[in-house]
Length: 169
Image (cartoon, rainbow, N blue to C red; front, side):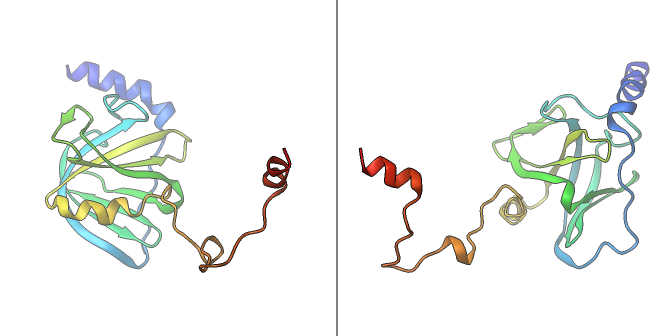
């Protein structure tokens, strides 16, 4: 089994590459630290293709924090994981990851792109699941209205060329 794990790590090395280094100054703390268990990382989109490079596939007690420049996962007895803000493509909850299956929305999953260009999912089982909405609110796919997106009652946007041509038929 150990030999198989090491061979998987060797096969993945070129695809995974190096993980980003933790900056000496991660910036302003915005959320956390929260505690839980790092359940592992998988090559996206598979929830079972566990990363075997280095110790990044090892489960460990963890503390995770959101800074203005990224997310830091500090793991007991293992290398910390730094996820730069611009690398994050999604933050969501899932039923399972890396062979760890739980109840619905039991695992907080951060999808991000490594410097090699490979997308991975890193999962955390938080001690306080009531904090998950604070984390999923950070999902870059979430649409937040801006001033230009909102209008006051009575304001009508001018029809586009497509809309006016539909009205003429």
